Image (cartoon, rainbow, N blue to C red):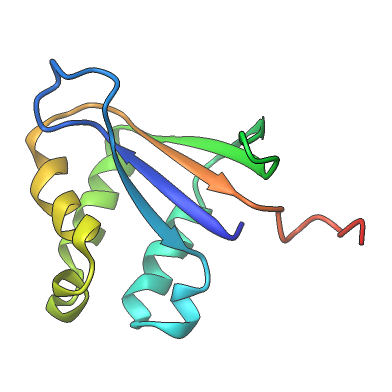
Length: 120
């Protein structure tokens, strides 16, 4: 996967259909603070289902953060270094927004599965 998107529901659950899109580049684990690597590994370990192609033709999979996994995700977000929180607007928003509700959180994965052979 090249990009992971966590679809954070709105702070007020009455506003159905609007999400804060928290994008994570899979390469950040190698090129940025090591905390991003922990976050990427956590998200890649979730059970995923194929979801076809995105509107721009990129392979897509989906997972759902529920119950204990959702709590583990929250705890991991709370360990983000201040320097990373300060430099990433949607990470700051996620830290403010996610703890305010108990809704399930969709996670979408974009790009080819690195475990599958390439057709190139």
